[in-house]
Length: 85
Image 1 (cartoon, helix red, strand yellow):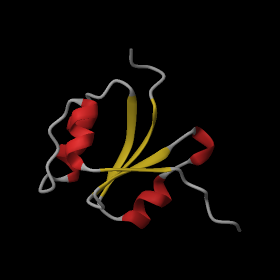
Image 2 (cartoon, one colour; image 1 turned 60 degrees about the vertical axis):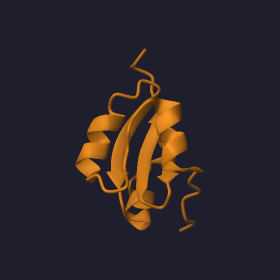
Image 3 (spheres, helix red, strand yellow; image 1 turned 180 degrees about the vertical axis):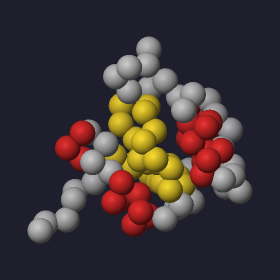
Image 4 (spheres, one colour; image 1 turned 30 degrees about the vertical axis):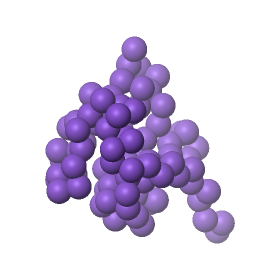
């Protein structure tokens, strides 16, 4: 079986916070990151992981999902939001 070809966007925390108007910090729990990123209207955050391999296993590329790698600290499994305006 061929491995999934997952799109990964890599960004630093400062840039991510500025782009999405949130205040993530490296020492936050994944639950807190999930809570803060749920307020981002342009993204649907499916899962927040700290482990790269777990994130890769959560992404469904057939549904347009991809990963935002934030400084190898948080891996956000996301897709462009269709429901939020």
